[in-house]
Image (tube, rainbow, N blue to C red; front, side, top):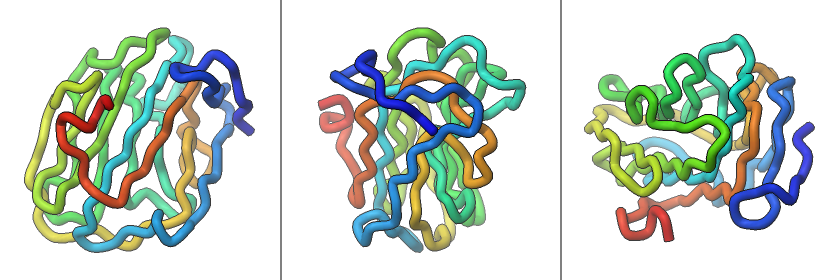
Length: 173
């Protein structure tokens, strides 16, 4: 599993080797989301250049599936966030080459009940207006998918899951 390192962005972080490591955050009541609940996923990531051969690795996912997730696209160095059960506009991407490997990047996915947006280093990169609602979410993982696949290779620090939206001013503070 992932190991704690002193080389985090804000003190200690978690180091992942890309080989099935993850942190199981659990399924406390404040981490359960469904329907159109507001949510914010926020983290500092420092991806290594030598990611696995998969084209996307997970930063956030669920132990019970991929209803809401944040992934790092290793093929074009972008971040994508998904609210998978929405009928339209269920994903948002930061765009190619927005994430720098070997450096700290602040990433945030925000759903305010209407707009689904993605921020990189405090800058809104893209947003969509989804329709429908997403399914039930609980039992969060950091650094891997539920099957221990799509595993992140690098360091993740200062992870936060909010049961509310964040304003642009709150993203980096």
